[in-house]
Image (cartoon, rainbow, N blue to C red; front, side, top):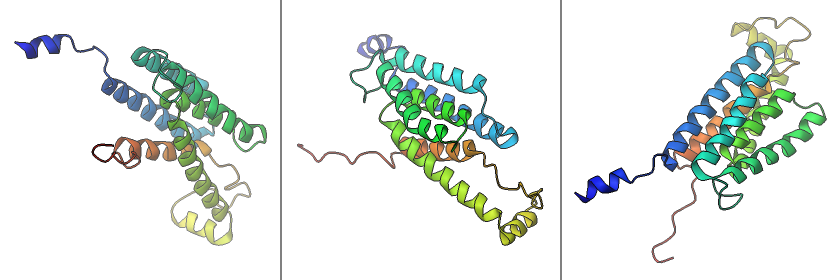
Length: 195
């Protein structure tokens, strides 16, 4: 039976397994980061460091070093981490974000690799920007009244809306980017026949 021989020679770890494992780790990391940032304004090292290490391990186990920085593999994961750290490190240095946010995007860089990290950073930045604008609007008189009607407590405090849990916006934007990539909304168009 030729089919049985082919099945027995199939690789134990296929790229499809990598996608599933990456999506599970990424989804869990983003969900936990958003939750802890919302509750305590912290994204913990005990979340981001293991996520980064898992990203490196997954990329390395499935693809080895990788053919280039833009193909899946350990080199792509390291390039994704470095890119995320350099881009968001500037925001961290200027006080625009916390160290937990920086470590979160660095872990995402390890999971997604290069070049996907750039789309994820753009989507996370856009969602974080919208979140920041909503927080500014919530600090106005009408915004405080709307928040109070929605059941959000503490609207009478002068500190209301000053601290924005950026991890929530980052997580939402990155998750939406990954969903768009996985559902082929952001996939390049197919080449015409004969091209």
